[in-house]
Length: 169
Image (cartoon, rainbow, N blue to C red; front, top):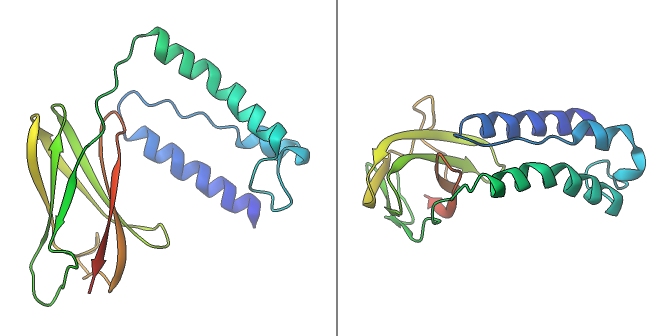
């Protein structure tokens, strides 16, 4: 089961990386799985030698990014959610207000506490400044979200995240 879980996790990471501009996905899963001494007893978490392998795999892509002079945008500095908690029976939408540090397209992802994506809201390009994205409290199929805590992640094409928690009642 661990092997299938690791494989599904690697595919999910690759899928997320492919959605963003200029993101390099470096997979060391095959190398870690090939040598049982690189992973701990659970078959998931790396031992010190596994961390060395991961660092070596990341060294070249990071050095290339630095050498290319890539300038990454500032992280999102403030996101506010209103109303929080969000009561589906009383409000139509929850608003996520944020300041865009640079002109870019932004993507809002909403995950439940198990990490499953509930909704993905793709927004048009925003200019630098303050903006609002709305969520109607529904999943991708249009079903109202169950009561609970959700994680909201906002990102731009250069993978800048700011995550806030939202309680849905």
